[in-house]
Length: 238
Image (tube, rainbow, N blue to C red):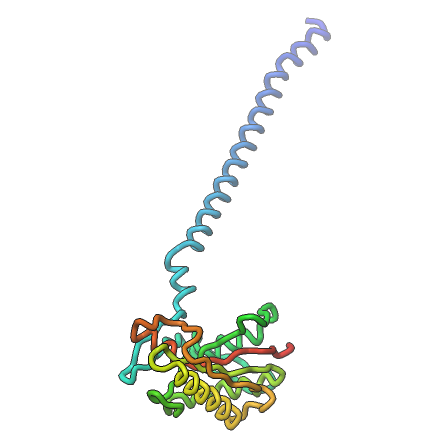
């Protein structure tokens, strides 16, 4: 066989081999691509399942109005596990429930992305402050939370707050307005006595039965509506 014929034979034999190698590369590449596509899709399904799972929603919603009525008709909120929160300006570490008014208020004050709502206000319900029935006299159990709030006002001296008090819709509304004003004024006075700067709490107002948070047709709802709240008017500049 001539040299030319030998070269032609080698070329003819190499062509199928080259084609076979190319096909193998394509098949392997397609397999790798399909593997990673399936893995990504599975990961997305798992992530979606976690976000949409009932248990996750339960956790996110578990601090909303969980509690029960006590023998005096007050709504006692679930405060969650005890946590420690470091306060600025060397005011120490505050031990409170993770669903407490204190925890929510401090989180809002420290969050640089949480903006002041100049229309609806930034209201935080006192969930451990209770008054005697049809009275502006506080129950002794209210003392701890009021002291905590006074300490928070000291720790955030540039913040400005107002106090609001509310009633349920039973009775005469003029009487409700009068009683709620007495309650709001009492809270403002006590917080200042406990150490809150006078410049921090500049207003107290009674709103009567306005802005209910519960159903006034139920005992639980009426107990929730008889409340005192603190409104953040201006935040501490971190």
